[in-house]
Length: 155
Image (cartoon, rainbow, N blue to C red; front, side, top):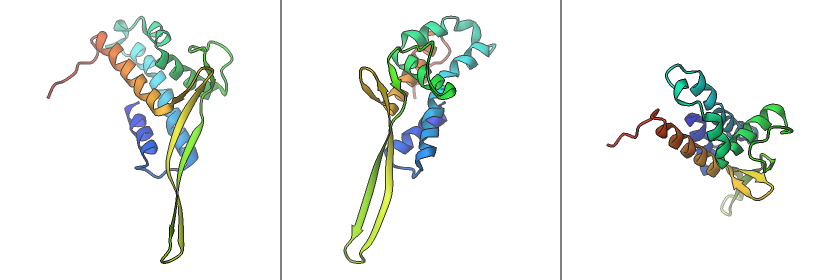
């Protein structure tokens, strides 16, 4: 999950040049992996007994319920039942930041895709996809910390 989060961060910052379809794959893969962390937690013998309320945690978290809808919508093409967030209309819209560079000395024209951002469209608002991803990570971190499954190390 964190590997996809870092990739997601890179495509939004423009530090990595990537195509539209690859960017979409990375964003969707983050939300799928983030949502399916619950499966790993439930099936892992060392953590499963600590997380019997994991579904309630997802349903009570605005961020994780949106994440679930994105993951399930991408898996099933559309959400038609069991929508957790009750607000997702469209789970994605890619926004592209292009740079057009024209040099007067050589009359060379360069066009490049600078960055790609992702927007989650709900019936109430548009949410920056990477912001949502960050909020999901924070919600998981809080839940796992409360369950004693992660500890914060101080340097």
